[in-house]
Image (cartoon, rainbow, N blue to C red; front, side, top):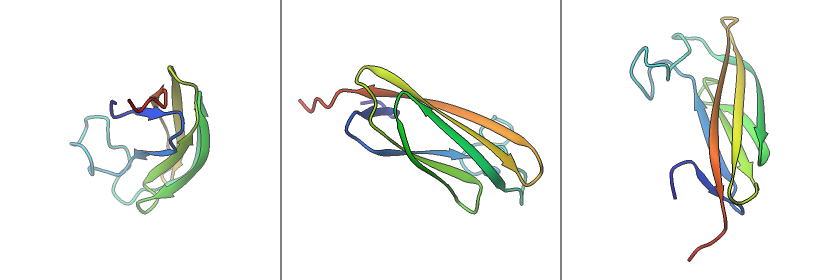
Length: 104
């Protein structure tokens, strides 16, 4: 199973981390917020699976999305759009391969 694979019956969480220089090097596109800037609103959509919930975390610099269901051998897409305390808008997306509940 690859990192972004999800079995049909699993409920998994996916993170969108916009914090400045936390998980990657500066200017590589992974970090977005300036020091002291936070996320103030969010709109999360999931196609191809069910979004159970979404929440800010990490001092309002990240979004966690809980996803369930989906049809085997398909792909689900999570899109996370946020507005920052600096008045900027950022949108990121990730795809998830949905695989069958075959444990053999």
